[in-house]
Amino acid sequence: MARPKLPIDQRRRLTMTVRIRQDLDEGFAAVAHLRGTTKSGLVSQYAAEQIRVEQERDPARFAAALKEIKSQRKTQVGSKSGGRRSH
Image (cartoon, rainbow, N blue to C red; front, side):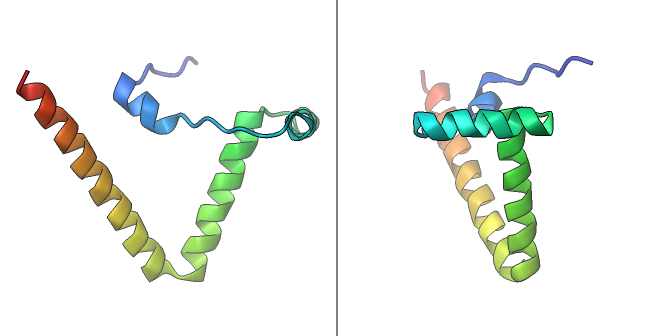
């Protein structure tokens, strides 16, 4: 099943460029191959694990940080769309 195509703004927020040394990239590609996944899949797995660890360590602090991030993003989106309306 094909993934639905996301709007450009959402794709930009969900895409990350990571720069690593060539030897690390090759080793990372080998790990992904051995685990039957992709480098992107490994990064997603690692991110999910780190989120779980922080949520378990201090749920209230994590929730506060998440709320702050969402507020910042909402402000950024609002200021960008506000600028577009004036043109």
